[in-house]
Image 1 (cartoon, rainbow, N blue to C red):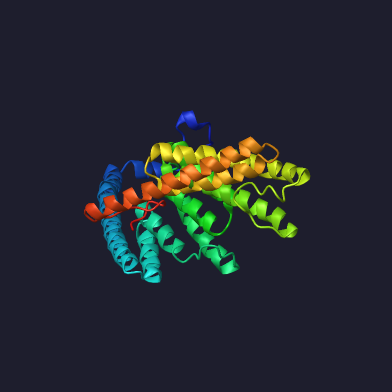
Image 2 (cartoon, rainbow, N blue to C red):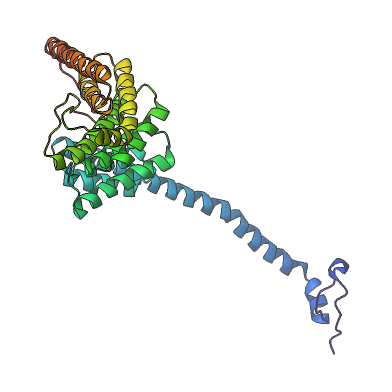
Length: 318
């Protein structure tokens, strides 16, 4: 009969259940050594297998990166040829092959943006715009200071008439690059646009249009107070950002023209102060003259200089 042992504890080194047969097996050191040799061989092969797997993964990753680059190049060529749907497919494939390739995502956002019709707020157009915004957001998740993605989002919001969101994103651009003239200019344009819309909502029911000189004949004291409340902050901010745009780009003729327009909106909120209104209209005229002169100078410089690649306000090639 086999002699049984009771478990005393882990530190005692005794098995949980043992017998004389176990003693017989321990008397055969040759059997244990063979088993140990097998275990050692298995352990020795593990690092080799791991190295092979790593090499295979690296090879696959390298291959996918090459495919991603190929799709990226094909997408750029399609984009330059105006084949935006084809470009979108290539950029989507590039991001699938290499999700860590931020350039592919940026280009995909740009290509999607080209399918957004400016000023159109239909569900399909808004959906396309949101797809592009989501792509730009994924770039910003990796690089929060990517200015081109910020500008892309701001442009999409502007083109779908979401002016407050567009202005917020342009201000984010300025937080990263305070000297960006296009961002400051766009904030000023949005402020003028909103102020102009506010004015027309008041004037049109009165059977009047904006005369650009303070609308003295129709702005009663009551109407004047409404204009001051709605447009005062917009005009103040607009003048500030447009001036900043010109400070950072002295030859910015578009910003000068919008300064002219914004001073004419200031003439409306200065109703009741005739001298201030006249001064506003005079400054508007000065900026008109300066804008026209600067534009002629800029055109002359373009004619003299060699052609080249230029960038628009979204950082894209023109």
